[in-house]
View 1 (cartoon, rainbow, N blue to C red):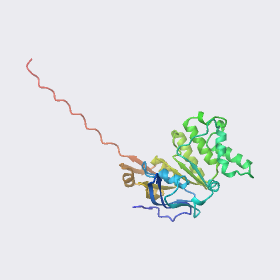
View 2 (cartoon, helix red, strand yellow; view 1 turned 90 degrees about the vertical axis):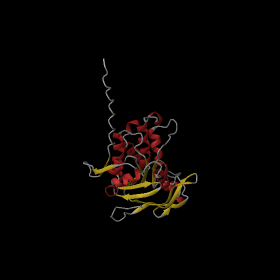
View 3 (cartoon, rainbow, N blue to C red; view 1 turned 60 degrees about the vertical axis):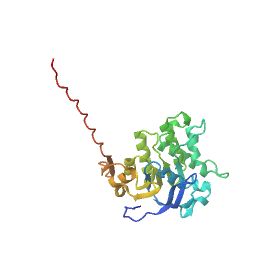
View 4 (cartoon, one colour; view 1 turned 90 degrees about the horizontal axis):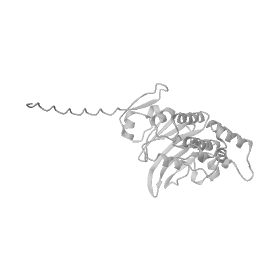
Length: 286
């Protein structure tokens, strides 16, 4: 049963899926899904592999055409919104991205300003500031002249994040933004997401690490088999029973000593039985 354990009233919603049915090659991954994204939230989508997390995110960004239902932005179906106008409202960090051969960091990040350009509006001081701010936030200022393909996987991921930030959209969608990053840079990215959310942006991210999701999300969406299982604040949603039901893993859920948020601790595996000792053969006559 779909639940919403959060007893507080719904916050304003700019972006939502309404009766969404979608998938690939005529095979539905998501069927008749209703998902509101609270405005000003850091919403994190979790669930097992193949449950429809990335499919939902790609649908919210209009990368997948629904077979039924709609994605609404300010009450209007985004299927009918002009591409450049939509790109000024919703930014996307996809799961995998390929940079044009030979492009530098500064040139790729600057492409985030494309939705704001036109034949009558050329590069401006506001564009330059947006790019420089994005580079500073992702700690890439010293790498601006480097070729993107020459960077490490973690550095490349930060370049794509910077490009999405330079787009300066009020809504930002991130599909596994911590991929390729070591733990230090994972924390940097998630702390940055929190800062952006506190500054007024709405973020929606797919994460695999349940403890990171519980620690950073202000709103959690839990999916299984293309359907919504639960949504709400992590403190209200994350329980041992939910994790067992959705992921098939036995856990304890305790309070994180740093944040008070739910902390998921998997049960230790049962110890292996001790090998049977070989019986000592009886001594025979010498």
